[in-house]
Length: 157
Image (cartoon, rainbow, N blue to C red; front, side):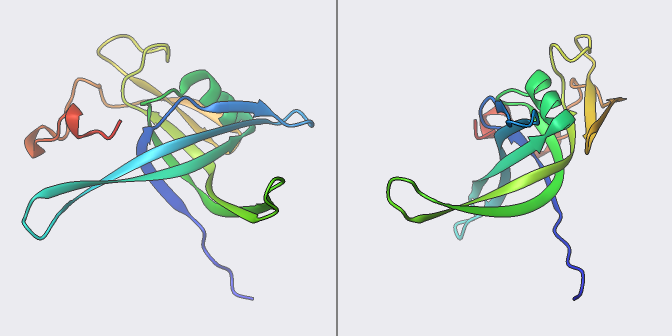
């Protein structure tokens, strides 16, 4: 059978504080949502924002980084794969489905209090599978989109 490709790359903002739990075997699991936005022109030529919400799941060391450093509004770069799981609802007996992104690599972007950076500079933690390292990012004071008219009001949360 031919090998397929299941790879997702997302850049967006966390919609609410992550939920952290542990399995009976001691594996740390983080579940959270990520919003990605796209701007398109409608038939009248007016810009319309379209937000897509993604359900993400991280395990082990990556989940620990999520627990310690990610909160609502955090900007993340994510690489992972899509997985759809199913189960039978205990109350209705109906089959339920949930599509999630399993996080393989994660980088925290933008400034952040409590992430070891001083005001005016930013650092990001990068997690690839179960390892983590610290890497420098562009200062948060630089606005890469200033010439495009994007403001905080354009962010969907």
